[in-house]
Amino acid sequence: MTSNLLARFSGRALMALCALAMASAPVHAETLEIHGSNTIGATLAPMLVEGFLAGQAGQPVTRRGTGEANEQILTGQRANTAVQALVAAHGSSTGFRALDAGAADIWASSRPAKPSEVDRMAGRADLRDLTSEHVIAIDGLAVLVNPGNPVNQLSIETLARIFAGEIRNWSDVGGKDQAIRLYARDDRSGTWDTFQSLVLGKTYTLDPTAQRYESNDQLSDDVSRDPAGIGFAGLASVRNSKVLAISDGQAPALKPNQLTVASEDYPLARRLYMYTAGNQTPVLAREFIEFVLGEDGQAIVSESGFVSQNPMAVKPELDGQTPDTFRRLTANYQRLTVNFRFSEGRTKLDNKAQRDLRRVAEYLAQTNQSTDDVLLIGFADQQSNELRAQMISELRALSVRKALSDLGVGDIAYTGYGHYMPVGTAGGDTGQQRNGRVEVWVRGL
Image: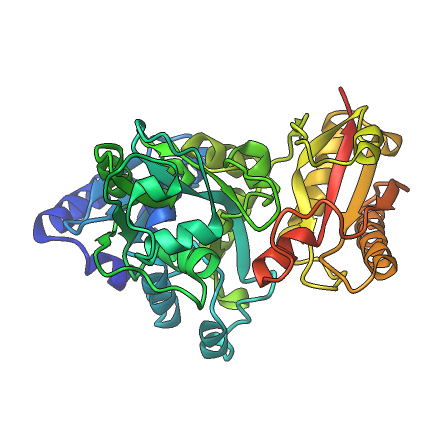
């Protein structure tokens, strides 16, 4: 990737890099290129690269711009070798094009790979395989308004109608009598793709009056200054704006926080990805990905403002709709900030779940908890009858129990709760995927 990297330097920056190379002991240099999502590339990816390089040699890591907006060069050492890493954050789709063209080692994306992208890369790598698809963090798509706005929550349906221009005045949703102004990410953004998929769907189209942004932070800053504004951004870019609680169907309205986002119960939670070219991935990029997915990398994820995948035990606030039977079942337990999720009617664990199994096993070992302290509770998406829902929920819990047993975590108690306590709309793909889950509960420490 060296020629691609150097081509991005201005003349002055290139001279500075040459001077640095001549003054340094290492003769050879390695390069790492990360292209794609602004959500990931603005802050998180540079922090991860810095943590990775600092841990390799214990030497300071320098940062500089390339002369292009939303691009950074990080320079450090690995063993006795200089490393230059480029982070170019121009949108998730640009990252795929760079990976496909061989101009990037890693594609940073705030959405999953599209079927067309999977097909295009099929000759080189399977983007859906564990060797290529890496969930690096969980983000909550925060719906933002001015701090003085009296509105505190909206349903996804109402939010869609607002951004489609069908609801144009705040007074129609319990706010002041003033016209609503819309702020949205641009078309190259994975944040926009997520909003379009989870909120607008196939029914609504964004109102053309919406102001569009390449940057999450700039969008949030402008919304925070506009009493009539509403926008959406990644959770790490809330800044001075007010965050609304969001409801999906009959499920309770939730604000994005550590538990609701990490467990993906929050309706607008999303996974952040890094994609690589499977077995063709360079060694440096492979080692970087392993660092990102590990405990130290996930600690940096948390520090950056996103939600780490390192499990934590939390005592959740159960709402008034929670059945008494469930309250009694979990009375002496705390919930881990991880859910094992399944597609509709299925019991096969996805790529994130494969990593989470190891994280749960490591958490239990670190906290000295026995398998007697753990309870797995399975849930089903909406089914035609209660018996089928109960069977699916129990099979899902059993599949997680078996997978943990394969990792040396002995027999764990499990139960199924059918299709009760949904966290999303039963009739949509995203709701079904969030309802079909296994929660992990541990006895209070």
